[in-house]
Every structure is written in C-alpha cells, then in structure tokens.
Length: 511
Image (cartoon, rainbow, N blue to C red; front, side, top):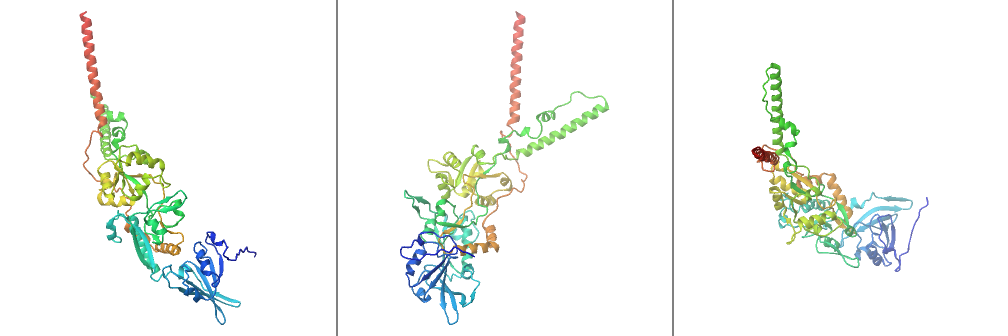
C-alpha cells in the first residue's frame, strides 16, 4: 500500500519548529550527539513532543539522564538499547519540570524478524505521579470558605469552588499526587493592547498562564481570547443557570378576579330574587329547583373567588415582561456580575445588558449589588427581582421559605446567554489527558454525582399550599367597589336629573 511520507533533516536553519502540530502520528528520529538539547528546547514550544507523536532517540540513555533533559510526562521518547540477542525499547520521562527524577519503562523488544511490543498506554502506565505537586488555583470571595471546603455547610458561598476542591482531592489520590491549593480572590480579566497582545490581571487566569498553577479550581466562562491559552476540560455544574428570581404578584394585580370563574351575567343572576309566587305545584317545584341550582352556582363562584385570591399570576414568564413591571432589581455581589453587567462582552445579550444595567441596576453609588442572603430576604419581603445563580437561590430558599412562599416563586432568564462554565488548564499542560481521564473515572464510578447532590440543592418545588389566613386589600376587591361606585354615581345622576326635571316641569306649569 502506497503511503505518503514526509521527512526533513533538522538543521539550524530548519523551520519545522515554527508551526503548531495537531496530535497526529509523527515520528522524530534524533541523535543525542547532534544538538539534541537545542532541538528538544524548540520542540517543547510546539506540540511535536506530545503523544501520539513518537521520538526515537539514538544514543546512550544515561546521557539523557545525566543531562537532565526535560522529557515530558505526556511524551513517548524511545531509546533502543542493544543487548546480546535483542534490542530493548526503553522510554523515560519526568513527571514535571521540577521533578528531576526520571521514570524508566521497557515497552518492547526487537530481535531479527521477531518483535514484541507490550500493551503500552501512557494514560494507563503513568498514573503514579510519586507525590509530585498538583496545583489548583481556587477563587474565594468569602474568607469563611477556608473552614468549610468539605463539610457541605454554607453552600451559597463559593459553591463553584467547593465541589472542585473535593473532586481534585479525589484526582490527587488517583494519581498519587500532592494536592496544593492556591487561593486568589478573583478570576483576573484579559486585556488586549493595541498590538494584539493579551495580558491578564492578577487572578486565577494569570496563575495558569505563568505556571503558578496546573489547573483552575473554579469554573470560568469560555471566550475566544481564553481559547488561545486554555483548554476547557470539564463542566462540574450540571444545573448551572443565572436567573432572576422573584415572588409572583397576586393574580388580582393583573386581572379582574370576579370575571374569571363564570360569565358576568351568571354572577348577577345568582343574586336575583323572585317576587312572583307561583300558585301551581309544578311552578313551585320549578322555582325551587331553579333557586337551588343558582345557589350552588353562586357558592361555587364564591369559592372560586377565594381560591383565585390565593393564586399568583403566571404572566411574567420572560425578561421582557419582568422588565416592564414596577419591580425593583438587584444582583448578587459577585466579581463576575459586576464585570459582565458593566462591560459589553460575547457572554451577555447586549440589548438587555444595557437596558437592565442602565435603568435597573446602576446607581450613583455604584450599583444594586447585594449579598445572596440579603437579596433573597428582599425578594421574599417585597416585589423585588434578584439575579443570582440558581443553585445558590435554591439553597437559601429551602432554608428560609415556607411551602406557600415557594409556590409563588418564578425564575426567568438573566442578561447572560445560555452557556456552561468549565474548569480549564493551560493548552500545553502535560497533565491534561491524565486529568481528563480522572474526571471520566469519577463520573463513571458515581463519585461525581454523589458529591454533586451533597454540594447543591435542587430547584425548589411547590408541594401544595397550606391553609392560611389571607387578608384582602383594595386591589383584590377593586372591581366590586368600582361597580358599587358606578352604581352610586348613576343613582346620584338620576336623582339630580329627576330633581331638575321636576323643577323644570313645576316652573313650566306655573307659567
């Protein structure tokens, strides 16, 4: 079978290292005595050293060990070692740059026409990191989180971080690594200068870019800028959603309760009296049945009115209808909320970001940003729409809301586009595939799902309203009072008309 084979001799003028190689099956043959250190240094800036690319190194393996060449964990460098009757195929690697010890493995042998390659897999045979540091950068916005990483308390504080700390502790055990937590107080935002160079402000992203951390311990949103530097690896927040939560107003605020149960004419007929007394037996029976029927209808009408007085409207079902209400607005006091509400980005719907921020959130003193606890209390006690992450709202609502109050809650979309935040790692990280496989193992074994249920509350459900005493205000009985007022007005108007007509006729008769 004909194959296309490309080859190039490596010289000082060679341009082979000036391109980024996608993971493919390249084979590189190099000699330790021919500028190996220089070529290896250039290759490390590309993806050429990453498995499944294979490097066959000619020369004494001990030279590579003594020179402390950095041969990454996720690479396959094969050193043929000639014995008496066969050639051993030996691979060596270092767990990371700071780990000077080499790990050595024999992956196969070759002799004449007989060759034997072991069932070799980097991701299966190199999972012992021998205590090497596994550094995760965590964003903490509350100091108390340091005391509650693993006890499932205060679930509304830094919940994006706590579950990942537990998962990375599992992964460190799987890889026999030392879990190191690096704490920062913000993600750090990217800024692009006039020359197109991106700089990250201090925070989690900067720690990853400058190799202070191996993986993010807090989820982040993906963006075209970040894709240049990071690989988004896993989404631990299955139910992530940023919503406006609010207490739905009573149904009487949006519609006339007294015309909902029945036709208006039926409600009037239910209160009519019969002034004519029938004489025949059949007439009396018909009258009796009619009165009983309308009595039941009127009773049902009244009961329906009582039920509707306890109902809440469902007409506020999107951001547009919520925006057009007289509700006050507020947002959870988080770094990312302040950034995305005040800056146009590809993560938000710009039309709504600008309208909501300019007219509902922004104030002369900064903005309506409240702690999650305070915002939920304001939402419970008044007509107030509070924007926060849904699992945070669920936890606080379960703690402080009664069953009746839960039944009146509504969630609508926020200014954010639909997306899922991910954990991320540097694109050139040698740990990348090992962490991905470890997350897959946590998912398949159920450890991830178990921790997720412990760390997050489900969206509150209405389990039926309890019997409560309900006060009725002027809004609820506006329609009957309006009818009564119209009747009084018409009566007064007719009375004045009669008086005027009477006086007019009296004067006319006197003339």
